[in-house]
View 1 (cartoon, rainbow, N blue to C red):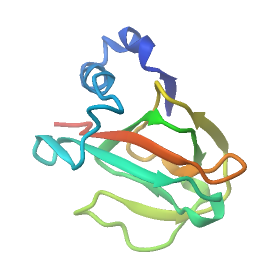
View 2 (tube, helix red, strand yellow):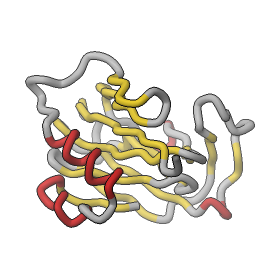
View 3 (cartoon, one colour):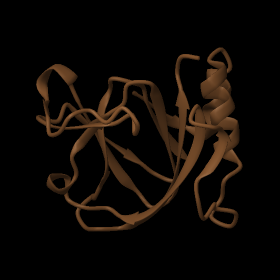
View 4 (spheres, rainbow, N blue to C red):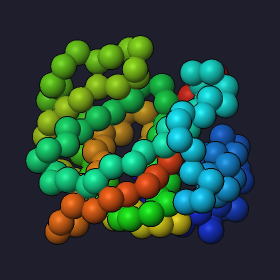
Length: 151
């Protein structure tokens, strides 16, 4: 996982897919926040707007993807993103190939607090859960840019 400020996007110029995504996300604000999914390249590249309240970690399962990376970019609010080791978690269901998502349970390795202007990149195979509250529920506004890592 990479956790950083969008202000540092130039650090990722040598990673073209990530850099392109960060440049796109940087243009999303509270004022122009999309109301629905933005399809940029079919199932290979799209942006999903997320509006919800954070919740206790016990209410959120871990997930992992096989082909797509997620970039969680915070517009408003603060949420925790927790990571886990894929070798130490247990699947809750069969992996959904159409949704590129598997759900898991297991021990937390780390927690990162994403605040406005920051992002967390989660690559395929990296177990994570989002929407974790910091003390009490809080409304958040974020955009999740999903892109297929391999062509």
